Image 1 (cartoon, rainbow, N blue to C red):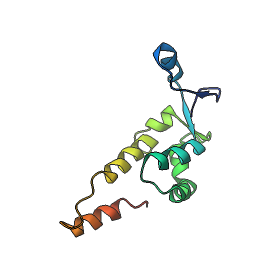
Image 2 (spheres, rainbow, N blue to C red):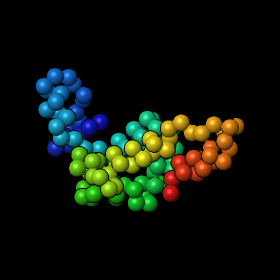
Image 3 (tube, one colour):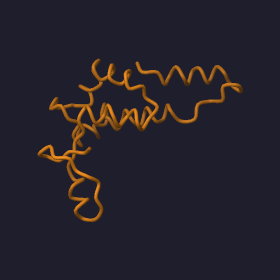
Length: 113
């Protein structure tokens, strides 16, 4: 769930009230560990290991334990940048039968580093 300034969870409502609620939000590590594997082809155990190895610290730029909007949109190492890069790699792999070398290169590039 998205959290507001005081840490309360916000639902995605419509209208002006929903817009006000979405004005400031944050994500906890638990949120990220549940949402990313549910939304993307990401192994939950590999994600947890990567978060422990420094990915969480990169995303949580101010070290407050939450990914704020500023952390999320940080252009050099924010979560949005990571998502865009990951989604780009997850898009349409080359055809394995038509181009095995390209398929394996794509698969290798998609592996977490």
